[in-house]
Length: 402
Image 1 (tube, rainbow, N blue to C red):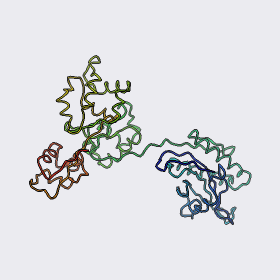
Image 2: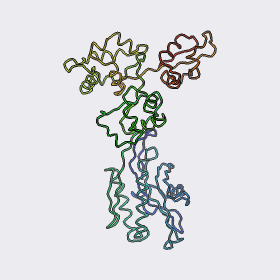
Image 3: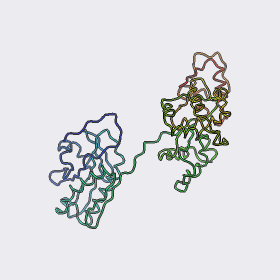
Image 4: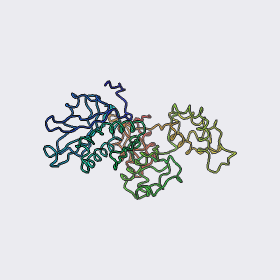
């Protein structure tokens, strides 16, 4: 069977291309007994991979994913010891086959569950070894493949008294790494959260997630180990409850992204923006104008700080909350933060070292921005203003904006 070509760089969810049922035959060795659709995996391909699909006993009852020869096969081999079998042992493996570049980890629990069901049926009624019931396996495999691909779930009657339920759980993208300087921001209203559904540590830190406190500060104020806070925040990101944004400072600079056009074109997004950035005590009839909001976003650029924008536009007079403006822009991807990375030039030492740069000079390598440096030396209470004043005073430090 010809396999459709795909982009080698693709990493999306994969349909199940085929399901194999293979066994160890007492004379022929490992073999495909059934596969649906027929002929998807050739004998030559299977023979080359059979040591992984029907493996040695130490690899049994362990999930195996083999990605080779243009195939990605997920299996869970099982061996059953009993005197009724030739050589006193039955070794089998029901495997899902997908395209090699596709994401398949969401199938792993289904493969494990299917093989365990087969094991239970074999122990109860010799479902796999009895020639009569064995004939049902091909239609079962095809039914499972079609329903999982089309409906993401299936309910299959294995016998008159046994039913198997399989369901593909929604796959979320891997959450980004959480750093000390990241600020978690709730993506849903707080009144929609149900703290009782979360573990005790998450319940403990949720009140401190306000879009302003960074991870290190949350750990301190909530009296929770910072590594635990990071793990909890990462879990909340995975379920789409939290987004990470940079620390807010009036010395920060931001740059509009291409998505800013959507704010102009999308009426619903415009109305959401106006509601979100309005000052808390502004009456409805005095909400900020979209023109004022859009002008502030468009005026953001390299070297222009939030302090500069406030002096230019006086957002309070326009009923605009500048902090909410930045939070909304970051949340919707309309703007991005311009970070500052100090780099120490070793051969220029005309400026004497200061207490500030003595604390953080090892971090002046171009890989650490102001937020990261201040968080790493937080115990010395180093502020971004102190760091920036020291960097600008010295001539042996270059500042990279990106």
